[in-house]
Length: 368
Image (cartoon, rainbow, N blue to C red):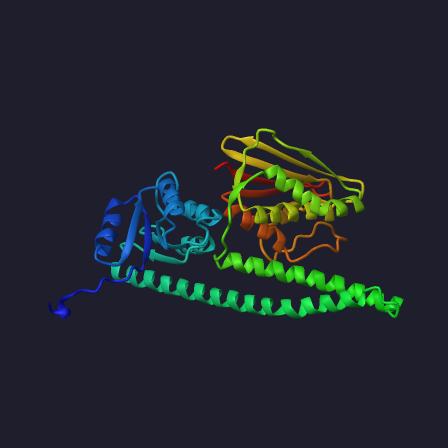
């Protein structure tokens, strides 16, 4: 067999979604890409296009502006608001709205490219490939950043652990240790513990971002996990005179959870409730069922969270100020980790708060 006549299959270049009510245009794009290494999906209106975008996660959306019921601007606006589609590349295609104002609006809403109809298919292919190359380069740069960040953070853990151990040695019951040395040792120990906590949280976030995290699920009792987490912090809550109350649904089924990871979520939320609540206040924990979901809420009566900061509450490295005079703010990694763990279990976590009246965190989990 003559090897020169064997065609090597082209590597798949990407998935495209065309949202356009003009059938002749979508057919033209389909015909042009027929022998190109792309997967193509089409939608003839905004609503079905949004659904397909969320389901198929295309690399690029080719979006027409003039469509009935929902125009391209509104589709783009909704794409950017949806967590599942907010990062998709979008190329605006239009035959009528070619004025500078429309172009400005499209880019302001988050469009990545703007092309006029009738489409020059060769130009379209060049633009599509250029966008895909740029996205690949951005992803590689982000991967390198994460790897470098993880390396630096990992290298910090060893010296901090040694520092903590040295401080603990100073604090041993040594008659030669004076009051000043003991105070210095205490400060070093507490500071190193705080820094180690930040380092471990940063490593945890890094592992989630690299998508290399694995859950070890098993049938677990949510009530048992709640009470174990409370047991870990019972002494701290008693020290601050914060009373915990519990309201468990007795018919709650076992859930497929990673017990260690999910306890981390509950413990983090309990710790925050204690940290940001005044003495002689309370925290109420409740579980219940609604349809095919298992719900859990944790409500404190602390200083609350400003409404303006709620959207960033679960974003890594976005520190949220619970009080103007609070010294308890951190990096925001704890809640970001909670969100990652809950979502890895197929659940959601949300927060609501009235400043000065406390905060309520609600977790929703699937039964199966």
